[in-house]
Amino acid sequence: MDKFINETLHKLEIEIKEVEIESNISIQQLEVVINLIIKLLGNLKEFVLKKGFSNIDKEIYFFKCQKPLIVSKLIYYNAIYKIETKKPYGAKPLKKYLKKELKKLKRYFENNIEFYKYYRTNNSFLDEKLFLRDKYDIKVSLDTFYFEADHRFSTTHDYKVAKIIANDLIQVYLEDQLNNISREKNLISLP
Image 1 (tube, rainbow, N blue to C red):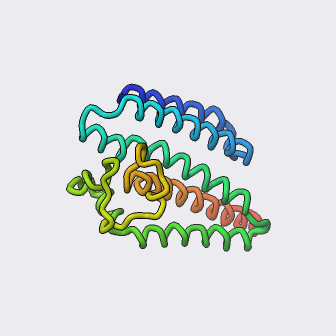
Image 2 (cartoon, helix red, strand yellow; image 1 turned 120 degrees about the horizontal axis):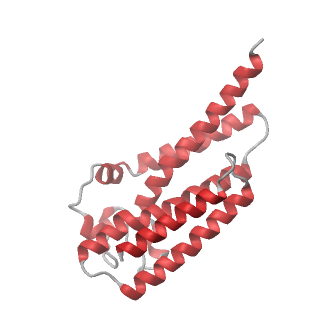
Image 3 (spheres, rainbow, N blue to C red; image 1 turned 30 degrees about the vertical axis):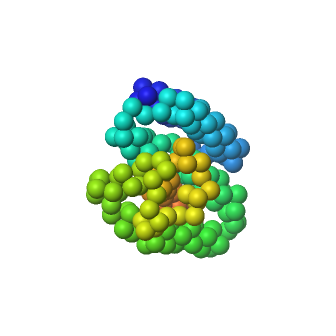
C-alpha cells in the first residue's frame, strides 16, 4: 500500500509542477490542479476501500500522515482559487482583503489550539480515537464535516491535519502577496 500511496503523491507533485511552470498560476491552472487532485483522491479512495489496511498502525499512519498530505493540497489550491477569484483591485483594498484572510487563518488556529499542539508535538496517545475509521468520541471536539464525510475513507481528524498543513501554506501565500504589495509601493515611491 505504501508504494501505491507514495507513487500517487509523487505523480501528483510532478503533475502540479507541470501546471505551475509559470510563477503566477492562473485561475484556469488552479482549476486544472484542483480537478487533478480530486481525481487522484478518488483513485486513492478506491484503492484503500479495495485493499484495506493490514493493521491498526498502518491505518493510523495513512489517516494521520499520508492522506492529509494530498487533501491539504486540495484545501490549499481551492483556497487560493477562492482568494484569487475574489481579489479586489487596488493596493489598499487588496491589502485589507489579504489581511482579513490572514485573520481567518489565525481564528482557525485559535479555535483548534489544543489539536495543533497535539499534532505539532507528534503526540500519539489519542491516535486510536482520532485516526481510525468509525471511531469517534464526541468529546474530542468533532467538526460537523465529519458527520457528512464518508466514514469508510475518513476519520474524525484526518481533515483537521490536512487543514493545518494547508493553512501553513496559505499563510505563506498571503504573506508573500502582502510583501509584493509593499515592494511595489516602495518601488513606486523611489525617485
